[in-house]
Length: 151
Image (spheres, rainbow, N blue to C red):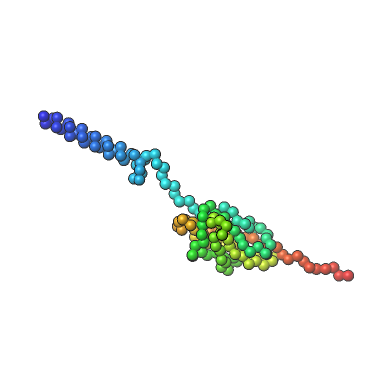
């Protein structure tokens, strides 16, 4: 009789262990290896395009530079955006939340360097996701010469 009791207790213990092991492998929120995919790590904010290309020569009348990013973005309250070392204003575009517009005041025949410090542009849904530092060099066209030949 004692032997029977022992085997029943052993059987119950082994079944309980088996159920616990199956539960641990079923996935769910505790990452047990089930069919649920692991959450994707947050993607970085990446610059996709700019309205002025590196090394371009543009008209001095251009008053905005548009930067298009990989996700919806906003300008950080701590943004450090400069044009030739002087702070310039920037804001999320009114047309699309994936764009940032930088205000420009250009002069003819000059070279310009736009610098956007890392962390100046952030994802709207998670401001810990930031765009890396960005630098853009371009020039403006010179005014046409108004020299007239002597008569």
